[in-house]
Length: 523
Ligand code: DHE
Image (cartoon, rainbow, N blue to C red):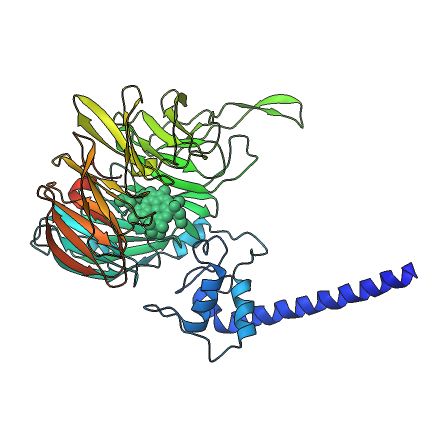
């Protein structure tokens, strides 16, 4: 009897197995005939975005189903409601969330082969072709129809608007003279744009799923942080030619890691790299003559002995800080650039890491998941303070950078994402976009450490990212809806001055503030 049960179970499993295999083959065929032409046969992306689970992290499967059914507005993605049955759409929506059978690679050769020029760099003009102040331009990322705009910070006018790859994220990075700006999209496309001729110059795909980009202090090297593959990519900024692909993993070579973000530390001639999966921070000297870094020793269990690791040689030698209790993926530099301050993962502690001695030198109790990446510093009563919002609590925290003492915890209307100020302004601006009052931004007096005004540019509409102009005279605020806008305020009177229409604007970046490393903005 038991033998019969086993035989029956085996037959059912075989039948189910073969029907699953048939379903898979059918879905694969559907994907190949309907999706592959834009999204790539391997789902790595093409004219459309990559369709891999890590790239789709921000799109729920149900939303993916709707996109396949109805298409996506303002893109080339058509709706398949007429062409495919509901069951087929369900199968495709499930298919794109499956991990690929082999982890996708993106090599130096792939990067180089993806390089495209819109314009011969040798023919670029030798002076700006517009009469706006080149250092008071704003670059605005518009997520609605995936474009970016260049705006005149004095006349409050749009000078140019151009397409980007889907989902540009993080701050675009400017060359030290402010002429070129570099964007990266979540699909890993890096774009170089010329703010003198107002033209796209070149683009390259540096990864399959990228996080952000940084530029060296001399403007010659770009570093791209990737989630997929687990790499850090260095590019020659002028040509976007790949210079080096660094496989990212821990010192003992046991675990690879996604790269959370890469930041430039200009006075240190280095990049500092935050990791998602390993308890390390890296510092990388980008100079051509950077000396090799001795990696230290590890205990080899197999050989039962201590072995010296090979040195990390140039270009771009890796100097590791690996005495961290856990990954530190959101941090800010202190004004001396000797320390980074980051949060513990549970948000209950801040850790101060000294980059010179390469270890944690202070721990401070915290609450509400501090967002250090949005931190700014300013002088008050002869002391430099560091202020940052908290992502899970409607508060702004202010610390004294001499001893990391908490000076103030200011209650706000909701957890916020972006804090901005300028050395010429007495105010800092903070959104409440993660809370119920996401349509408000609050103005904080940096002397009194009190809220002095709440603005609601469009009731009910998302109000988020702010940035000052280069003089600290005006504040630009994004209303991030499809029929959105940038609202410009007088930074002194706090009165509204103008509205500039924009399609789901996210961040905007002032050239002068960025290249001058204004204390009130992110870098
Ligand atoms: Fe961002 C910057 C990480 C979600 C808009 N965001 C950054 C940076 C990091 C980061 C590490 C700094 C990089 C830089 O500027 O070089 N962001 C993350 C996340 O981990 C998170 C929470 C989840 C994710 O999906 O990646 C996240 N970010 C968002 C959004 O949902 C926002 C609001 C809309 C969007 O674009 O997806 C968003 N992030 C921004 C913006 C900046 C940014 C506008 C640049 C701020 C600046 O002024 O410099």
